[in-house]
Amino acid sequence: MGCARARDGARDPHPPGQSQAWTLADFEPFAGSELDAMGGCAGSRRRLLDSEGEETAPEPRPRLLDRQGALWKNAMGFWLLGLCNNFSYVVMLSAAHDILSHQRASGNQSHVDPDPAPTTHNSSSRFDCNSVSTAAVLLADILPTLVIKLLAPLGLHLLPYSPRVLVSGICSAGSFILVAFSHSVGTSLCGVVLASISSGLGEVTFLSLTAFYPRAVISWWSSGTGGAGLLGALSYLGLTQAGLSPQHTLLSMLGIPALLLASYFFLLTSPEPQDPGGEEEAETSARQPLINSEAPEAKPDSSSNLSLQERWNVFKGLLWYIVPLVLVYFAEYFINQGLFELLFFRNTSLTHAQQYRWYQMLYQAGVFVSRSSLRCCRIRFTWVLALLQCFNLAFLLVDVWLSFLPSIYLVFLIILYEGLLGGAAYVNTFHNIALETSDEHREFAMAAACISDTLGISLSGLLALPLHDFLCRLS
Image 1: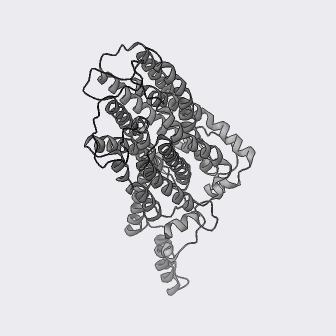
Image 2: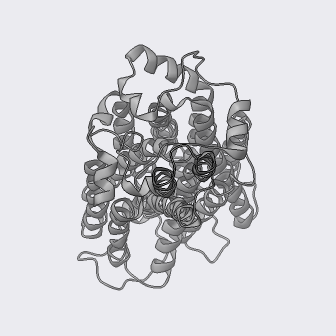
């Protein structure tokens, strides 16, 4: 808990890493040299030179090892935070078909058949539709997040980080419990809303927090969110496939919110002043800044003092990256929650519910791989990814209409490719923003850019609902 207090610090909204007082340990490399100089002859040039040489000598190995240990702890901490923050969100989307078809019997028996016979909810349609589109679950899972992200740049920074993380963890645990013990679709959707609040609040909080750590933690955070997608979808698929009931599957995931809190309060170290250095510093200097300013860069902890005009200027500079990410997420979630349920193949041994779970799992696998690929592949022009994702949407929409793809395995490959594009767009967008914004603007820029994916997802859910109803009326 001491580390968490250091992050919130004297000025509640932000970590005080840059302004914290020096301790005796910070001066250890210098103490010996200064005492030697004081103990010798005051006029001795040799002793003076020895003292200067000691002061400019490299840091002792223990100090370097401690710093490397802190870097790895922070990297693993942000990976786990990304994993835990998005886990409940992903699980709710993976369970969307089950929530709406309400396959659980009254009382949620501890063991139910994971492979129920397909039930045609709309006998007049070739799509085997639920009465409500899975986009309804998507909207419940994303609209609260959208509200949080819209309001976050205006005043969320006034709330310390620790209470935000506590609220996020409590909401995540509450979502699993409420959906697990629900006996109606309405109650289940309330649980999905809690998952949305947890994920949205956590994403804004942790992406803002990266401004106080080396920029490399952004790639670890992104990889963790990708891991949440893969592990969340895979765990729900695997446990239900093994015969565990949806209720017990959800309850078995209650350890995830506890891991989130432990990662924040006990694993992350107190942030220190940033010095990118090396390849990252060279790449930063080669980039054109999003906001031109001749003033010297301020430390991240001054971002709360930005005026409304400065915030608007920063936001306008971000549009080059925000708009492509909105398009990418609009296209991929229109596919995921608008078309997945309609991409139903009867010439396979998989039931409709199983097909839907496999679609979700393969999509999340692609997202995980690409969100973890920043060290191997960096993409500056994210507009290309947006165009390719929109082409995916058009292609699968035509297939839903004409049913020309002969095998579900072709759809599996397309969905995996869709996930690769979406994950690459996410991680490269935030990496580019981190490189092209000043220290003064970075915390606000990261929080403001969070709205991109949420806005795209919300728009896709609103349009997927009427599309679902229209296609399900077709004979």
